[in-house]
Amino acid sequence: MFPEEPQAIPEESVRNIERMLMSMDGHLADQVRLRFGLERVVEYLYAARMQQRRIDEYLYTPSESPARASRFPTDRGAALCEAHFYFICWDSIYKVIENLRRTCYGLVTPREVLKRHRPSLEKYRHARDHLEHFPERLPGQKRTDWKGDSNSITGSVAGIRRDGMFVFQGEVWDVTQAGVDLLDIIVSEFIAGVLSEVTARHESFLNGESAMWAVRDKSHG
Image (cartoon, rainbow, N blue to C red; front, side, top):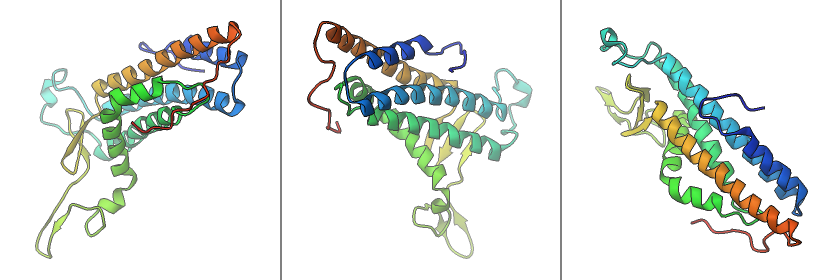
């Protein structure tokens, strides 16, 4: 189901979690939500990797192409479209991790991963929001930073620099391989943590204890 990648999260990790969940007690809705949530997180990570490669198709690395050092991306519009879905991948991963904080299994991994990486996840979510609601950023709209009069007008134009940085309204986001590497770390920590917790729950279940925790995480910290 998952494509082969040099840094791919082992498919077996997700499958092991699914097998253990299916063999334990628990609310069926939570079981299904956790299983599909894990799959979706990994799928969006793979999609983000693909999107970053597509963005690179419109950019170049000056150190590898010194003769082209003065050129901009070959197609800024297309690069922005690819970046839009790249940011959607970040946003979707955040939403799944946030959603899985509250299950009958009482997992702490979602909360801990969000605690460590919330600033980065929130920042990329803001980029998605910028592109998702771009019309609201245009001159005269409610979330614009454009200023001027009938003689001149200035404001932010969303774009990707040739060094692989997305820029808009004074902020900068890395859409190079470094950004994907960070997302890879976040997802890897998430999957590894869930695997460890579910394994512990499964061992307790085999010893005659319930795999469920009575108290669900309802905090937002």
